[in-house]
Image (tube, rainbow, N blue to C red; front, top):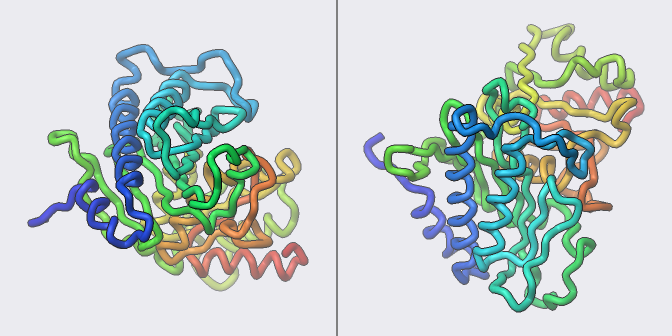
Length: 335
């Protein structure tokens, strides 16, 4: 690569696209990127500094909290609070959003994040990540009007979304509504450099991704949709790829094409993934890259959350592959 573009340079150049450009978004992204560098360093050194494993506590989702979960969450909340660019912070690890006190430096942005997606895989060295979603508070909304209810807005109103992937390399994939770009951390200079410009997801992929362990808990329409990929009638079968970290599975789907399915089942009748912390930001990226995302009945980005920790089914990936699932749902009367 004869020329490289650092993430900070691209963010600065994108300021001209925004009618609200005040420098707050640049400041927010700077602190978000710094947080990810700190988390990435600790993920890579986890086995050396005794921060692997569970803390013994359970989060608001009823899941075991890992030590790195707590570290990542604390790092992000602290950096976001001190950035001066946000008014509210929501985390999958916190029961309620955190609102920056009005008498402290704050800005127009609200950020939601899953601080360490796939943390159950930490101890076995599988790729994990941080997912984020950013909204902008309307100029006519008074600060004292902020409440959890005021933050529950559809994904179409996101001004940016993305994820950091901590694996064989550390990557940032994000969009501000002008396409999707991927950056890889050069640890030698400590900078995220543009390595995947203008990512476009193939319309049809070679892979499908889902947890077959829930097969007997799915309804017949979901089972038939999955069979259409692994036991197709008129095409070669797709290869199954499933990591169990949404960031890792989605990253592969985004680059290689295919479909990721985490539908509802008898144990999770409303789905398992969180809308605001996982499904909505990934849907924003998928659509910006030419893909689709649905809960099986409607577009993910059109869903208005009913609660901060609302769950949803998720079918996301290549446009034609998602349509294939929806056609089967329709034929089975499941739309």
